[in-house]
Image: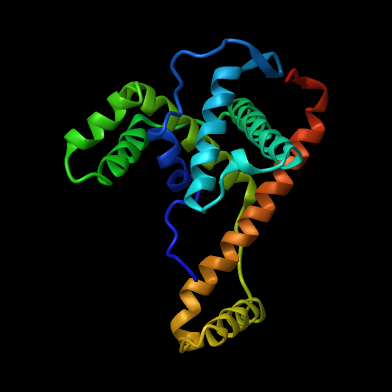
Length: 222
């Protein structure tokens, strides 16, 4: 049920990078603007395809959803692009920056997912993505992560919260006729789970506040 988490934002971004975070070709039509910065249709379409892939891995075919559900997914993708641009602009205003060494470290972490450098290079080539472009995307993700971490602040858990999550895990394991591990063994993973949930809630609150305070600077053209 629980998986050990790594850097909570960067890890989620790796697959997106390698499946086409930097689009090539496509339409230069503008689908939205954030404080005068354009979000292009070609980038939006790339994220739609990435979302389709993600859903397919969960056994869901987006093309088979009804029109209302499709519109909801498409709106979610556009919101994600708008939120990303909004956070980047806000982080820049706040003076958030990253060192080249931090970028290189993340690139090395991505490369380590492959048995050979050649496999990494072939995937980049297949997706018409250069290592320099990948570095730019990594830089953006690092800035976003640093900005969010700075604004989310320190989080903590209580024994009551951990026990509540453990009870859910135990009930699920027993329903599946599996022997649940004891509370103390599970405690580190339970803490990660609760902290991740709290962080996500804080991030959602922060993004909602940014959207409200910048509402007049956002124009959706799709």
